[in-house]
Image 1 (cartoon, rainbow, N blue to C red):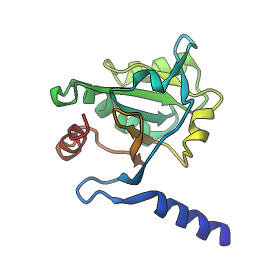
Image 2 (image 1 turned 90 degrees about the vertical axis):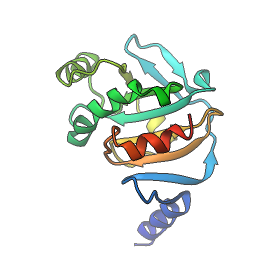
Image 3 (image 1 turned 120 degrees about the vertical axis):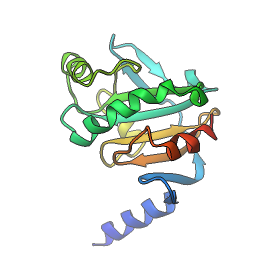
Length: 169
């Protein structure tokens, strides 16, 4: 019971309240800096998040077996088509231990055209960032600091969300 209370306290002290108008978006009370955040592309080549400094970054953690992930993926894909978000980089990172082939089929079935598939193998990035479930998206500002999280699914096409996010672009 004590562990549960401590966990609830840690979660509440890490994030401010949910934004008033946008469900599941939690803005950090303090910016968070991480070092050595890496993930893999479909060619199994390692990418370092710090290489994309100067851009607004959205890391989206998902899996092919996750129904809410499947529901939100098309709206995540279309997020890149908004002019006001021209400095946004989106990295959908599969943490479900799904194969490359299974992930490609998942994207094809959902008609995903604007974003690529990335992998967290063997789930080291998710551990470093303290993920507690999927889907979860983590937002980094141009300086590379985490400023917000989306815990659970969201409609990335929500006009309130796009307007809010464009303030960070």
